[in-house]
Image (cartoon, rainbow, N blue to C red; front, side):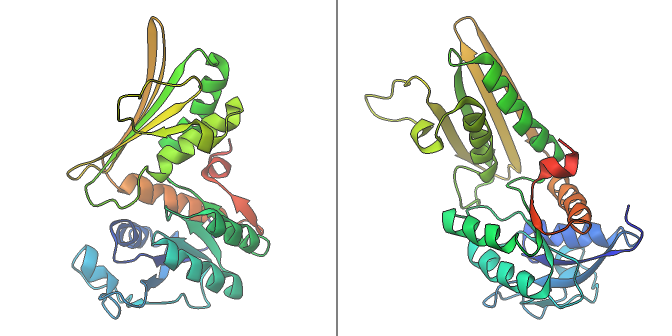
Length: 268
């Protein structure tokens, strides 16, 4: 716990994650002070009290479009277009960032790399502590088992999730590729279909399911003749990610400029 309250701004304030961050941060008044709630300019929630969107009780934090100057860390769970704008705003104001937005491309990563020269930035496709432990485990298992084991990743999310595969599934595959000398684009097969769908040596299958109100499930398979290992993470509440994001904000508030991950938060 920090000695003073961390002043946070929350982007994507009207979304599932953003609103819960505001609510749970508000329940820890000795640790956090939410000073800004942010949505993109076209949002119908601009000008609304952010508390009424979550608990139904006003909290006095009106949703706007930019963070103020008196902010330590901005937690961003918005959309790629929103993240691009906010990275620039945070650099201009010297505000640290926790970026949980998924669907960011190679050019976005370059923008974040450049921003990290002047501010502390933590980027995570998933802020669950359990998932981030699984990322390290996935790399270790893949490296030790070797090429005789087929690797498959299956992820499931609610039916309104826009991007596929999930950012977490991509991170799992990236961790495996880094540990085994594979190249992501050459190794990944996103689903299989057709008359010639036989597995190719060294490939990694990634499969996405979108259904109902599933919050997040990721299953990692390692299989060879005679045995199969399965590692599964199931999130039953978004508060799992919220608590991880707040822990990340606490970490970033104390860091100098640079790029960080949840592994740094966990001391891995």
